[in-house]
Amino acid sequence: MRGNRLLALLILCFSSLSIFASSKPNIVFILADDWGMGDIRFYGGERCKIDTPNMDALAAQGMAFTNAHSSSSVCTPSRYSVLTGRYNWRSERKNGVLNGTGAPLILPARETVASLLQTAGYATACIGKWHLGLDLPTTDGTPPQFTAKTAAELATKCNIDWSGRIGNSPVAVGFDYFWGISASLDMPPYIWIENDRFVGECTTIKAFNRPGPAHADFEAIDVLPTLVEKATGFISAQSQSDQPFFLYMPLNSPHTPIVPSVAFQGKSALGAYGDFVMETDWAVGAVVAALEKAGLAENTLIIVTADNGCSPASSRGIPEGMLQFTMEDGVSTDLSRHYPSITYRGHKADIYEGGHRVPFVARWDGTTAPGSVAGQPICLVDLFATCAEMVGVEVSATSAEDSISFLPILTGATQDPIRTDVVHHSINGSFSLRQGSWKMVFCPGSGGWSAPRPQTFKKVPTTGWYQLFDLENDPSEQTNVIVLHPETAERMTQLMQQYIAAGRSTPGAPQPNDGLATPLHPDWMIKAMGVTE
Image: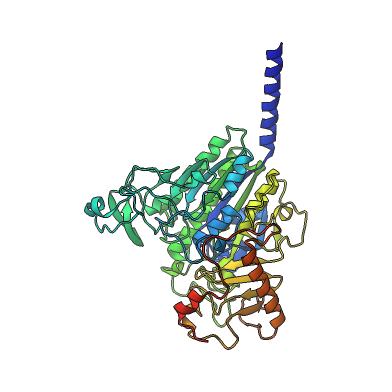
């Protein structure tokens, strides 16, 4: 009798857990690599010379954001903020990106979106480009290195242990499963990683822009199709389970090397880059189709966005006269030429809008209104708080210090901004702060790769070290109005200093930043530029 009661109680508990789990939405977060808003027809309109039917359909079925931003204008730091809910410059890396052998940037004790969702009962998978550092095993216990120029030299001039266990891989920070590559597709080693092991060993040297150790069968052109195959396989397997899942899919495309598959070569008027964008769009469509086929689409939040704006490297091979890549005297309205940043100034690496304003489309059937457009500012750092609110998990005081939930926007519960401000960061470590229509830029020039580049400033400009733009009246950031609004500049400077010092930009107890202090007027930058007062 007692045993029967216990059995009945267990059955009831497991049934309740199953119902609770199935009521939680699945989450698929696809992060394209170097994808400008103007590279998508929905955003770029007739000026976009690339067909993107799957992204256009996703926007028609869900909600498209027009004021979404990555926290940084380059790869590694953007990925850090996506997964941690923390501005990238709070990490130990204050500028630039990691390479394929870089040490882990997410510290072991740091909570991530994946570990948060694990505690809420989710199956979690990362399939794609990691680029957040790994502890690669070596044969001699020293940091990984390779100076081999030929396959014959690998045995003596490469100390990576291909049979060893990779430490602090994605499976150590909340993911149940990982399949992907260590960093960008032009950064060796060129070999697949599954969970915390290499898939085989590197026995040759290949160069996808940068030469380095490579698996004999690893080819850049195969990477995107393989990621799609793995992601759709994961989705199919999850259809046999009641457990909700989180799929984080950071793509390798359309980042260099530009390697469209044979099926997409010659499909676009913009040459190989356009072809690769079309294949990226196909990848999005394949994942959505897999969700629909598995009967999971209705209970899945699908988000597609990018880690930063389009890269200047994409212009290589585009037919003459087809592309305008930078602002020309403030003009970006020549509809005859493709412009990856729509109407905004700059591109990847820059502090200007084109560096960090990214496409962001969300489909959540029955929740997001089809064909809706959201103009409120959000940041990719907000994924953490949004997921926490969706699954009813409280964010700890030491996690997601800069994340704010945009769930009320997705559900249509508010038309008001959920953020009072957003902090941006460029490749050289420069900051900007967006508040309302004001954008305070704490450097001269772009802070990145477009003109005027940091290296061009040999003395402080006559308007001072900082810039202030009125985005409502000057969305292309052509006129620095800081001398006209000194009180606004001072207020925003003080707020930025407060956010840095407090270790957070959301309410709560102050938290420590990692590594050295992150100043607004970094001495190392002044010295590197040779700036004189």
